[in-house]
Image 1: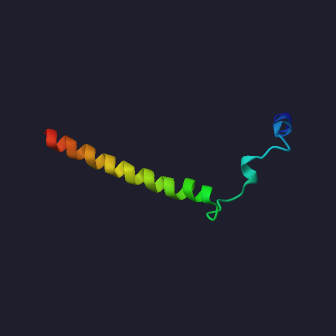
Image 2: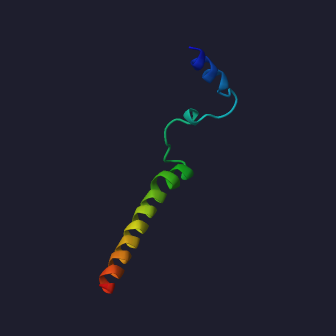
Length: 61
């Protein structure tokens, strides 16, 4: 019980907490870029990189 009380006392009251934001709002440009566009770009770049790496390994063999 004392541990829970000490944890609750450490939470700042006037600072924004990660849980205050809520869900992802895709109408916000920042959320759209970070949570949709960047992951798609990273996946595409990874697939291109793997394809070129496999092609280079096949040419060397």
